[in-house]
Image (cartoon, one colour):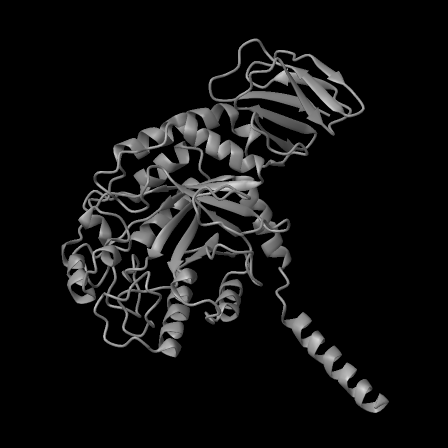
Length: 434
């Protein structure tokens, strides 16, 4: 009995050793990239594809049950003659955003780049015949903006992709519900290899579509993630699967919600990682892809509060734009970016490079820490004083806007600030020096 027990223990120890060895151990390059990603704080998401031609959003193929062969005909008329990558990146850089994440291939299966592994792409299927991603990559390099690629796990057009849940892609006319998973998986690896070989340094691969298959479906993430980290050792992996991060992932994504919240309905039961960078993705209006009748844009104040609250929760904000089919950005998207950019130019020091402060977010606002500074962002407060528990040894408190001294009282429990008589309509920032 003892011999059997000893043998069993050896086997368990051996198995545990194998599991431990196979677990993802982020390299020094990845850890550096994660920290730099957190420092950037603000990015612009771009959902663009041939669905823009119908001007009804990026899910239009599925929502309207469009046949995949008929839908593919849209590519023959896709000619974004006014697309100018340099103008895009210039406008985005002026907003204060430090990175761009663009859809390389969305759920409709159309590739917005030059790929050898599908004819359904910008170079082969359209009269435009220009590699959108290559031009954007070059412009990003020129302006010092990091480039990330969104990549869909699901595909409503490829016959080798297995039919997903009743929610998506089952009525596109594809003939074989079973598909050919091995072929499709290799296709994804081939395209990811192209994206990480032909477009220079890529900051992250951003996956979406996990929800399209049943719970427990084996996507082969270990192989995909390993490929990414091998091809570009500083490239981060994000996956919008609405759960806790899986082994091999470097960013935790929250869709339409700040970490720890569930107003958008996508984060029910989703915990918040205390070891990985966090990112909240949100739209400027209501749709991700271009929708001609969607003018329900967030105001400057709403947008800035979203950015500030995200930073206060230790998260980046990835704010989306859906370009028009002619290659231009909607007018309100441009003007909103300008408004945000003006504010960030004056106040970005209190956002970039910060981490969540020791005082948890409250109804009145948030705090952020950087070096020997604590930035108190007061978004709304009717009281004349503000108590910050746990903060000690303050040397100075001042208005960030003009350097005016702010009265404070140090107690054993924290700091009490005497607020200015008039608060800024958007954000009153008080800088504490430790």
